[in-house]
Length: 490
Image (cartoon, rainbow, N blue to C red):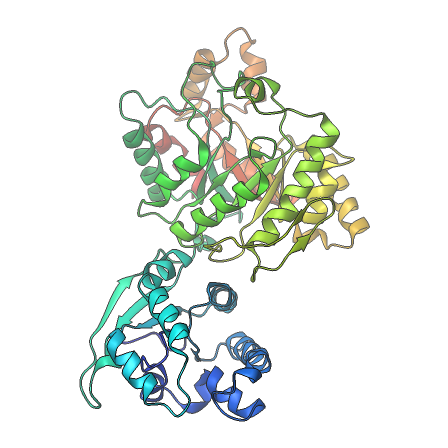
């Protein structure tokens, strides 16, 4: 197999597996960063374990510098430290380099024989531990987001042909630059109703595949335990969001996947961090997470979940974002936040890349300040007058906390009535409005054909800097309903 070039290539194998020989046969010496060689530079020799800390400090600096310049970089260590691997993977993602993990699947007997022949062999118990780790490492690598190549090169005699096999290639990191409208807005389908009849998985799959075909940038699920009265009746189905997103991650799409929004009162922040990291690994880097303080007491009471007062809920939101970011960071060190603390940050798999955190809510004193300090984006109402006022407050908070307002994207949730034409839009208003006056309902939901909504989104982008519209159709019954939205995505 021909590996991508340039690329970040991380060698994974026990002592004596042949990693250094494999690298030397394929790459220039300047391209290989070896922990053993660096021990020889800063210590008494390649096997001076007392020099390991200094050697790895230099290794990390060299890897970061080479990858940051887009240079081919081969990391020759054991490759068994998941924390180091995920930090290197993040560097590659940021630099736009392919990331390949090459697993040297050398028979254990050969590793032991070669190790015993060394002048300074690795202690037998340490080698045994490495060999145990190697039995499951390929599967672990695939969940982290690497392209994984397994080779028997280390077992071959010198000059013999190597046998290489690609065992896992995750979905590529999402790139939605070509999934924006002509005004530069990405449109994410927000799904809040689930009229799936007798085939829940089939309904969800159909919606996702059609959304992907039409050019939606992603799918967001409303995260509630009971259907909310603004959308439907309490006995209508509303699935657990992260289980459902896991199903969607298994489909062959380029859709970004996440929630809008997860109340930080429903699950401990660490559990949310674990779910989102797993979703990002399974989807190849397409996860995002929307978070909020929570508002609906009924669902909390019905499921035995405490529903504290507003101040404590906002504390949970702030602490929760800090906690998630700590658990997604490289390493496993202890962490201390504004109020919460963790004795360790061991959360594997790590996300493939940075996971966007969208703060939902428009409370001017606290929520928007949390978004300004900790969010990658803030989700606000789509009404232009309200949006203008809230955006001004958000930007003022950004200035107060020392962040460039451009670092916090402005997104909106929009619940439009979209018709094939003007007559169809009004027929939909009549079906949906209940006891609300038709004119009021039509105005509130901007009832019109798709081109009119496209113009409205263009104005939101131009006048208010909106980058993403989360579009929730109040009458999404099947995948066929999405076709009428297609002109909006052009």
